Length: 476
Image 1 (cartoon, rainbow, N blue to C red):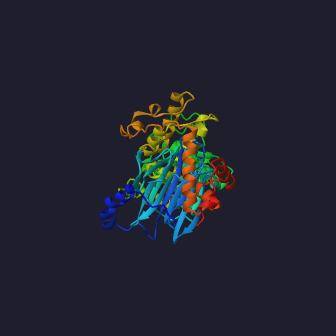
Image 2: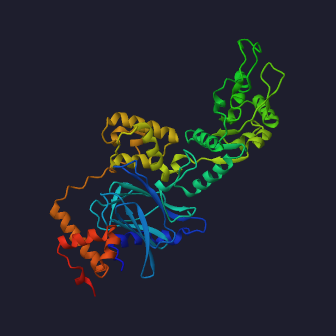
């Protein structure tokens, strides 16, 4: 039996009815709505998870001993029950339901309330990218993304092929799977992405997966002086030019049997492009000042933030060189398009930066981190966290410890007032009322009540004895 939705819910539906009818159909064959548990502000190292809502009609969210999901069929509707291991989340905290093709969230009478994008609500429609806040937990709603194979995936069950390839995003996970397969071959790979998205991390993962015995050598083509590009890449013989006091093998020969990352390949001068093309074709290098070629076993990964196809069209990058480099292309999305992975990334960065120290955040700080557009991507996020750890001096990282550009994403009214501390008598009275409501809804079935609360049956029976509630009296 479903609990009737409140007046605030009905009002929200009424306000949205016209846009629902006029807008595009949201259920598509190519995608499905998803809910991501992104981050807990009191336990940022704890892993989140992903829930595909495609097969659900109703979603209930409550506290429990572990992150879990199971489905029930009730009165012809599919109910997805999500439990979150957060003491700040009530046993029956929030409820999501599809209305006219759109998901609506309603607070289920929780102790700490439900917030959407920093605003406490009784009921509200969910837009793509909406940020739900329940207790200490932040969840992200995505309206349509490619369907995932698993209806529920806990982040701690992820098994990335290499460091840097962990993601909760189904489309990015599929790209990383293709990359892992290609990494075991010798085909060249082009990694495209904005500055700071982790292109070198991906290149390092490719080298790790390739199991090539040689070193991983990274060179920033944009940082090489134009007059030294060829000598740095291909090496030189002693006396080849003024200052060449000894033989140097160059970066290409140094990466023999390993992996060479040509970062910012779009900045490579045309003259060096021509020489590099010959190296890739012949698999041999001729050092500056030498006439004798030297064989090299190269695996090349090229990376750039620029549109290489546009560079070719503008005749500033050789089409034949791109054809040699472009065995597989991976586009890394910017951080603002990977918000579902922010918890994974923040946890990984904190493990590196905090070095085993316990870290917590205030709700306002997490809200700002998750809403920030991060124009400089993961690199900017890392520097932000490093500075915040220093300023917090071992305490909880608050909004005041974040840079101004991050703090500014919150409106002045965004911070919420902490809920007042409740007495033991108030807690017991609320628990009594919750149990009575659930027993009525489930006809006195203690097992069903325990499942709805995300608690063990023995725990619910103990509460019933302590509160002198007879479940048999609720059977019809």
